[in-house]
Length: 228
Image (tube, rainbow, N blue to C red):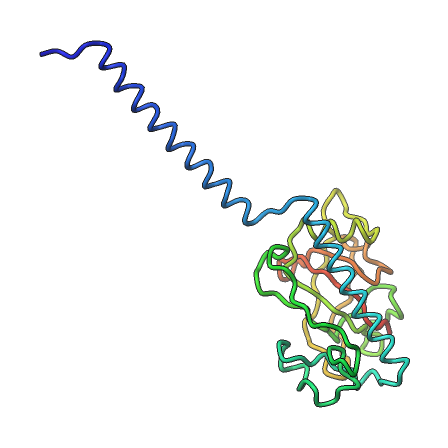
């Protein structure tokens, strides 16, 4: 018995519908996957504002502690959730930035949604100087105390610079050869100057900003806590 043309058409349309449904499901899955790694401009600006505000809070706390008599060498970023290199929390309360008796800053972890790599934390660095912030001499005597967050998403980095009036050349953050990651533990060294390259000239004289670290292939937000 031969099948009618109508039944053949029905089968064709069923197969076409299945194919279209499969294509739609794939497109939705890809869209959902993309939403994990990208954020809206509004969210980027919100996160940027949070990072800038936190950096400013840290800088003001360090200034207040210095005015109350804390020496630079005594300053501590110890906290139970911070790296052991920063010392033991509550062993010297008056000089600890995250201790209620010291700087009284709340130790905060950045939102993973604002980061390329979840779990990144603020680091407090001792072996870098920012070009023309404080004195620039390429030596430990001029190294600045810096808070840095590596792994920021590019849109957040761009938004940080927009809010801080740091130029984003051709819409991209400035590029620098890198930032040294030696943690501050009471003394300074010298390894790198940030903002001394043609590609990072927009950072010159900027106490805070965001740039692409070509050494680690990551976007880095920084805030100078103590210019020297």
